[in-house]
Length: 110
Length: 115
Image: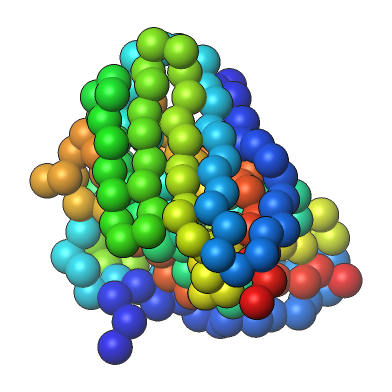
């Protein structure tokens, strides 16, 4: 069973703080690494998908990097806003379906 | 209208009852998935289907069955519900043309409580 680990489990920051969290996985062959954003009472929504070592993706204040050799991906949020409060899920596409980590729950206090 | 819909959105049932959760999609995607989410855990894959004739077990298929009635419909059944099947259930779809990245699109979820 593939183990996708996310840290920290939860994070409380103040509005305006920058923050980052980690997704770790066994360094192995995989097709893609995904980041999803899941707001309470809504559906998870895709943020980024990365496939190559060194990939970097950016969407507004949120960015992500991928290091396949050492088996991790970072998600960064610059200048956190209350609307960034959500659970951020990492998932690995190894074979035919995604394996998800348990997520990092971010709370941004105004 | 939502691209991926799930019915019901909430359901409370009793131990031993048969329950069906339904998922429909208008995205035209061949691939469909069922996940469950428990507090503190990530999404765990129950079953997935890459087309109407291709159905596969996921990590936690025991106690569940599925039916792919058409490209657009994928149902999840609990033959005899038990309390530890209380969870949030998500349906998702993906487009094989986007393979191998396979971004998934999720429905709104069904909250199931088994008493």
